Amino acid sequence: MSLYLSLIKMRFINGIQYRVAAIAGIITQFAFGFMFISMYLAFYRTNPTVFPMEVSELVSYIWIQQAFIMLFVTWFFEADIFSAITSGGIAYELARPMDLYNKWFCQCVASRVARAVLRCLPILFIGFILPAPYRLVLPANAMHFFLFLLSSILALGVVVAFGMLIYIATFYTMSPIGVRIIFAVFADFMAGQVVPLPFFPNGFRQVAELLPFAAMQNMPLRIYSGNITGTSALYGILLQVFWLVVLLIIGKAWMRSTLKKVVVQGG
Image (tube, rainbow, N blue to C red; front, side, top):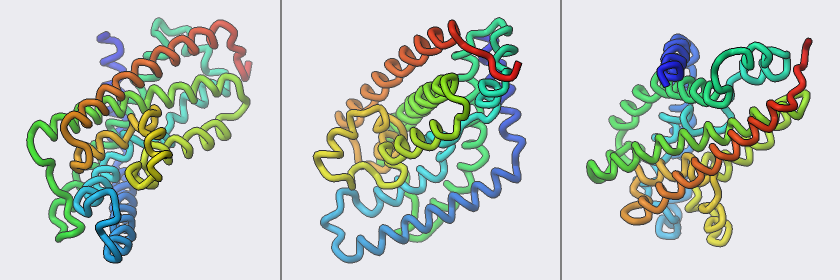
């Protein structure tokens, strides 16, 4: 365990060194957040009663989404993992006395957390001081905030576990680009990155909320905003635990099967 904790520490320290990229990311996320909120407000002004989320809920959803985007999006991948698979560097990875799945999982978690730490505080600060209706508000109570933190940790685990499946799938292709684009775009849409799930048509939404994608950013963001409360929040967290366990089992089993017949590219 200490070996993996050391790996997480090293990747985290390495990740927080990219300050220029963090500043660019902060500006980008703030611009997108303001743009999305302004777009939704334009629709809300026509007839606010027909929408499935209150304005304050939607605004909080968007700001938290932008602040912690690096924790939840599926399009962020570790380039060196793809490089190791496609260039032949995987041979060195297999020579190390570490479980490859656990190593990559810890590496991905640390990188995401490091980038989120660099970006989130300025965005949250700006969100809290903006005037209504653009202002980010705090959760209703301490228990609600605790559920948000717990859900966020589980969502991060689900996102990384899903990403591990994409890394493993790359063993069977000559290029990771196609797999990344197809799965990442579909997963982010189904997770509520583009449009929150409450805005989906009822039948489609009910199915989407049972899929692993709903256990990603959809759940913590809706818990924070107050769109999901009480037993619904607890049910959502249990669903996150279920999908995290399922994806971990599938990923580990697939990794073991793949490494038994892996062909090293590049020498």
